[in-house]
Each structure stands twice: as structure tokens, then as C-alpha cells.
Length: 116
Image (cartoon, rainbow, N blue to C red; front, side):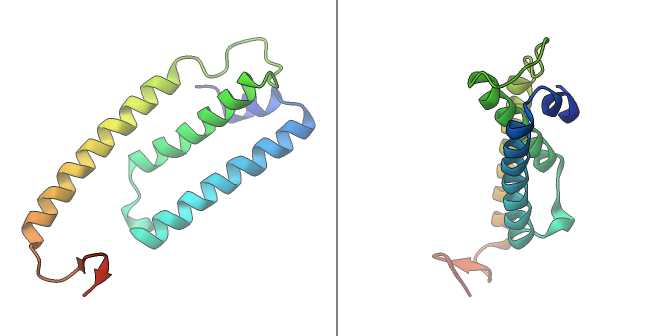
């Protein structure tokens, strides 16, 4: 995957400012959601991969719009690889979640979306 500096260098100054704004807003939103949901102490590799995926997807969006002025392919095939890793990590987290749920049973926690 291209370094973020290469992606930014391939954008015009105006597009660079907009790209950076979008990137920061999406990343900030995810960080807030993660912190409020699980806390930062449960940050995982899958979370880093998701933020990398955001960067790649935004770069592809600008590339599809014809706004990248690069002489080489910046993103390449990494998008598919990272997406596959995210899906694998998600499946593993679901397995852990099911195991934890079966251990906890119904003794506390959430019921019908409402905290007990």
C-alpha cells in the first residue's frame, strides 16, 4: 500500500485539504464509536486494518474521480487483501463473542437492547 504521503502528494492542494478533512472525520468518528463502545484498551489489529481500509477507499475514490496526479499505481491490489483480513478478523471476533455470550448466559448485561 502506498504511504499516505504519496497519496497526498498525488492530489492538488485543494483536493489534499478535502481528502485530509474527510479522512480525519471518518477516523475520528470511528475512534469515538470504539471508545464509547468498547474502550481504547480493547483496540485490536482489526481496528487498525479498518482505518487503513478507510485510507485506501478514499484514495480509490479520488482516483476514480480522476483527481490523482500520480505516475504510478498507489493503491494496487492491497485493498482486496486488507478487506479479506478484516473479514477474517470479524469472523474471529464473532466466534469470541458467541463463546463469551454462552459463558455469561443471561445473568446481567443487556436484554432487548436495554441495560439491566
